[in-house]
Image 1 (cartoon, rainbow, N blue to C red):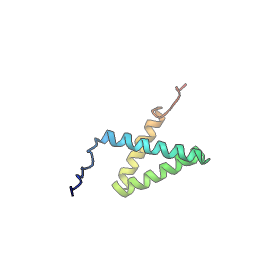
Image 2: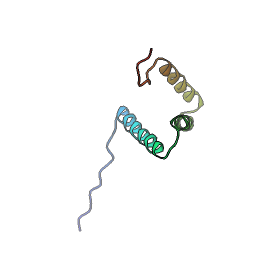
Image 3: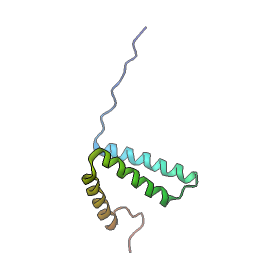
Image 4: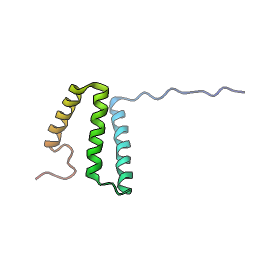
Length: 85
């Protein structure tokens, strides 16, 4: 009986991993919307969950730096889906 070949997981670049992760998060938002979950509530919960994960992985100081960078990017309109006036 032949032995099945097992393949190692494909190596992903950091950018590929971020894009895949963003796809998963987008799917979670879509599923939550189908269940009637308010988008703002889900967004805040997702940010809190993400911060907890960052703290667990990298510590409070690094998580705080990420939050600061995200705040600056949001203020600059990087996450806006419509043109700023």
